[in-house]
Image 1 (cartoon, rainbow, N blue to C red):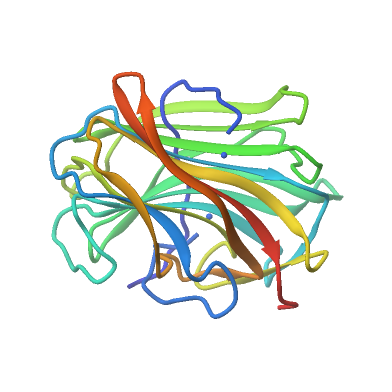
Image 2 (cartoon, rainbow, N blue to C red):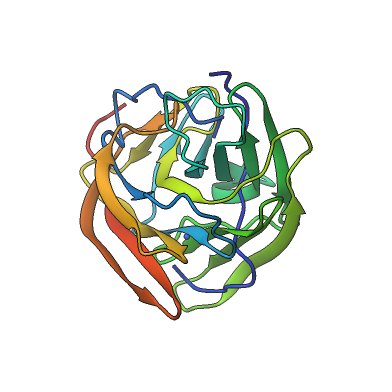
Amino acid sequence: MTNTKSSLIMVGGMLILFLLLTAPATVSASNGQNPNRQITSSNTSADNLSWVRMSMLANEPYHFSASNNNFSFQMNTLLNGGSNSCDCAFTWWLQGVVEVTNSHSGTKGAFVGDAFNEVWNGGNDHNFCYFYPSSPPNINFTGYDVLQQTTLNTTSKITYHMSVATSGGSNLYTNTQTCIYPSGYGSVSYFTQEEGVIVGDWSGNHVAFKPLHSTIMYGYIDMVSNHNSMSSSSLTIQTLESSNLYQDVTSHFGESYGSMYLYTVESNENTTATT
């Protein structure tokens, strides 16, 4: 699978304080997030207004290093019944990406520089639905949360939302866009499988976080559907990028969500290795 820089997306208008970068790949990372508990759905019917969400919150200030001093929050989602080994002609992978860099205007930290979605159909990929904060927020503070959400409005259109909030509940940045899929990528009818990882930013990059043996971040992924067909299982990760953060699942459950259904996986992201 060809690796290209990715981006992120969010679901329409939900400002809930609950929040990585290349085209997803089937290669397992040797150091971090493997295996990774994912949300799966057996639904094969059209699922307009369903959505996926990822929220990650800093547990303590941290340091990170990578070849380009970046890392990413990746919300990777298989579509339309696609699988890691599927070479399908229809659109079958959607990736929401939030990119973070270690400096801005000479100041060190963890600055959210941009976010976007990437769509992939078994041979072609395209980034779209971009956000560029004019004043990139620094998320390297205890309790600072990054959230992204993508909603399937129709088979040809999504709504992507990304927000950054403080531990006190103040929004540092929020943006929502409704975007039409790029031409040539087919329609999207339903979500099949969702994961959330914190890894290097693109093309197989690795990122290492410190302090070691600590919970750097914690949060959740969830999926909302019109169909009560969701569950979770430990599977090989979808991304080619890696990190020294290992997922410690604290809870996974399904429940009603108004007239729809929700499934959630909550986890701690722990530093376990030096590289």
